[in-house]
Length: 262
Image (cartoon, rainbow, N blue to C red; front, side):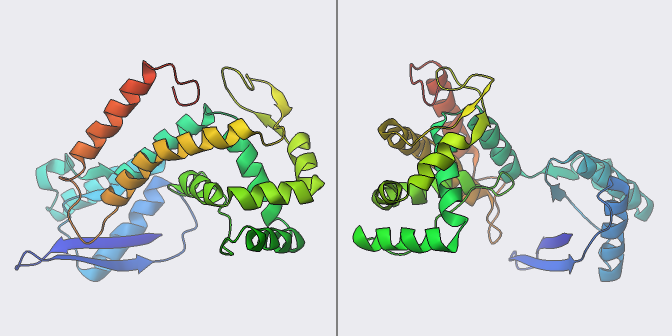
C-alpha cells in the first residue's frame, strides 16, 4: 500500500511526499483503514481534508472507518462529508475498459498478434529483423492490461507505427495466422462476434482502418487521464472543459452511423 501526502505550505506552494509504502496482508476496508491510521499517527498527521482512492468497494469502507477516527481526533472537517474523493483517472479507465468490451474485434486480433510476437525470444528477434527491413526503430510492442490506465491506447498507438513490420512478420511466420485462428474469443459486436465463442481470425486490412479510428478516439481519454493525474499542480479545477469535450464526442457518436465507434 502506498500513501502519498499532498499539502500547501504557508507560501502557497504545493508539495507531494510518499509517506508510506508497505505490504498489506488484507484488502478489507477495515484493515486498510488501520494501516493508514497507523501511518498518519506515526507522522503526526491528524488533520486530513480529503482522501483520494480508486472505486474498489473496500475503499469506501476504508474511508468510512477513517472518518470515524478523524471524528475521534476532533479533526473531521464537515463531519467527513467531503472526505472521500474518488479517483477520476480510475473512473476514466473503467469507462474505457467497459467500452472496449463492446468494441470491434479488431482490437482483440491486434492484442493476440502482439501477445504472440512477445511470447518468444525467437519471434521477437524475427520481428526486430522485420523492423530493420521496414526502416523502423527496434522498439518493444506494448501489450495492454485492464488495470493499467491508457494501456490499450498505448498498445494501438505503437502497433499503428509498426504496421509495416507486423505485416511483414505475418508474411514470414505462418504461426501467427494459426495462433489467431486458434484463439477463441467471446465478445459483443453488431457484425463480427455476438455473444458466442468464435476464433479471433486473421488480421484484415479493415482491422488496421478500425484500430486507427479507435486509437484516435481513445486519445481523448489518454490526454484527459494525463491532465487529471498531475501531482505538481491542482487538478480539481482544470478538467471541466475536457470532460465536456469527451461528453460531447460520446453524444455525437451515439447518434452517428459509425459502426466501429458508435
